[in-house]
Image (cartoon, rainbow, N blue to C red; front, side):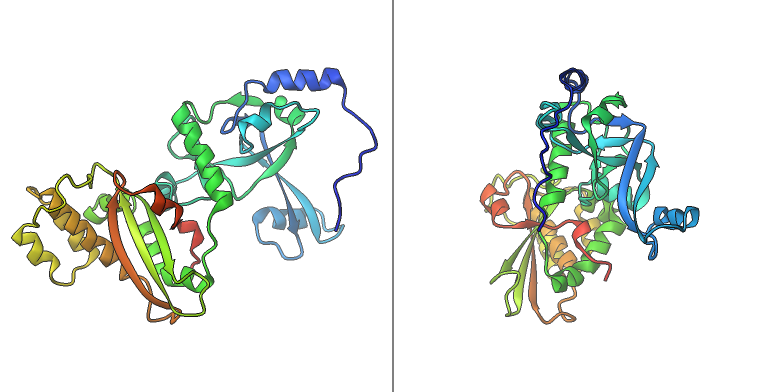
Length: 332
């Protein structure tokens, strides 16, 4: 196994590092640099992306493995701010990702935080994101020569960008059979998000979905998966009176099997009490959970669905569960 790079005693010029450090003092995570650059190692003998194909067509000489340089309009800083502003003599590198513009279902789900691959850059527009799956290391002197823009204009957007980066690198690896079983649920969420329909509005009201397995995810025995759909407080406030009765009409409605779209439509009817709304959300969570392909994957013994308001979901449950992101799921 190779060790760290050999140190022959060479050091950059103090004047150069001082000049670079002064230029980078105003940069932070989530900032955008232009013009951008992206580098990856590609196998041109088996091209998987258009850049690999183009590299093969432009130059057939050389080996199959190439360092392929792609010009991009801009890149966003992925490195933490503290690493960006540290002395370039000791920390000469930063990580950057290409800036992309999204549309359609991908935009809808990325905006809702359900696709960890993308981190929002609201300073450039609601449809502009950093593509965290593509990451390039550049020197700080390279960054210092680029034009500077604020990708995240305020503390809240900066925090959200940092959380997105952390989630992308630290997301939970579900077993393959769990990923495949969850595909229909993932697809339903993707298709309904940002659609002007009752179910679409319910999907947009979700903060996130948390999952717990018993006895454990990699158990040799069939596992039970509990999914908790955490709902925006504005759509499902914490219950002030947990003993409040559900109305007769809602009780009759939820007593029989219902499709998710029908439950969502019922949630938009006027005159619902908090107890009615809570009961209907539970029914909707159960309808979504029924999409999971339990019968096709025997190692999934059962899947249960529940719902909680973001105002009442405890931190202890956050620590003992994992977040369900659309990027975690295979295409089936």
